[in-house]
Image (cartoon, rainbow, N blue to C red; front, top):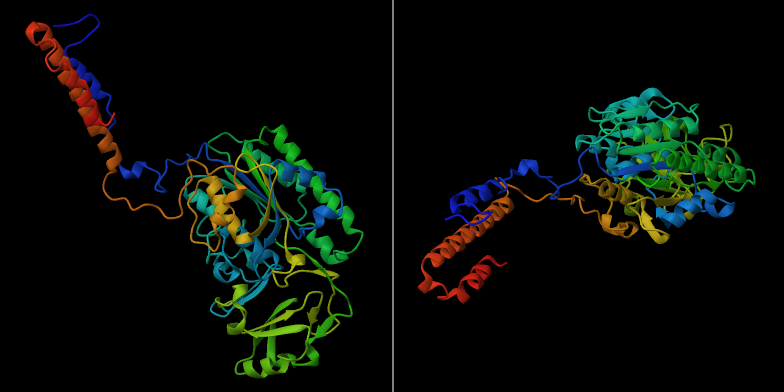
Length: 486
């Protein structure tokens, strides 16, 4: 019997079964344990580094654009970067979350005895993939996860690493203006969805170059810092004009700080050891020494107590807190100058009034950190973080699974406004066969449909058997609800 607007029991059952979800293969799920973002709607992130921008520069002169970022987002008062506090090691740590001994870019100038090759930021050796492939930078990770990346002059970003360049990148050219770099970045973020980048890195050489030339204590540095702040303002204005300011998460930081040097504070190695006994590999303030074969102990003994303003370490005795032992590119002897001192072979070489590379726990070596955007809290100040913690934080924002790293998301989780609902955990769940969750859902749906069918048939039967109309009816519906935990 058909009621008004109704259907037969079998037709109703068939129609409802067609609405049930099919079983879902684990291959259609985000393997991080969540649905994740597709490449088209992944959160956006821009990482900007002003080379050599010391943490306290923002308090030295008016820096309204830095403070605007901080007021709208977060700042960290003390960021402990990685040892040694040089440009290439720290920029690679920022995008890998690894200490230098692990990612392999241990200095701006290196020698690899296994390759019998030298690396120098002054030569084309920096474009050889072999130097960079002990780690995987974030732009490679995000591309392998289906996203897109862009890079404007970031150290290592114009090198093919594990077979990939960034989706968009500018080959390094110091003559390209900051404004041109920004315009390219804006264009990459503003491209059609299928071509737009999700993550980009932007590098600017100042105030590092001026810091070396003038020294951080020079009053002439004030104008340099003001110029950097104006460049940050240019970037934020361009983001606003492009409609990206509220969409792109912006992190502004640096690789290291800078300290003042003095011509009276020079340690001359020629006074203590003959150049015929060793090869000078890396420069002050952390000098890498490769003794000639069989001469390690002789060189070490000549230098160990040579000058009270110089620490001398055999490789295996480098303090553990530096995380700077376990790589073949770290030389057998490391000389470390005390802050403000310079190690030279003699005084005939060039001298800089400012330098970096010293102990990463020194405040003068530590960088600025500020961030804003939809992922970050507002007007929040954090006391301390490590630069290696930035990598898992960026992965969290971008919803990509981080590779093994030396950082900790829990150390910086408080910078985020809320944990993204689609974030991927560091360790994916073990999945085998098909996911049971859809199967259980389908089973419950079938039970509900069958229950409906039973009730429907019973109602029809009761209408045809008036004497049974009210028999035990008070038990039927509650029992059905209890069984299904509705």
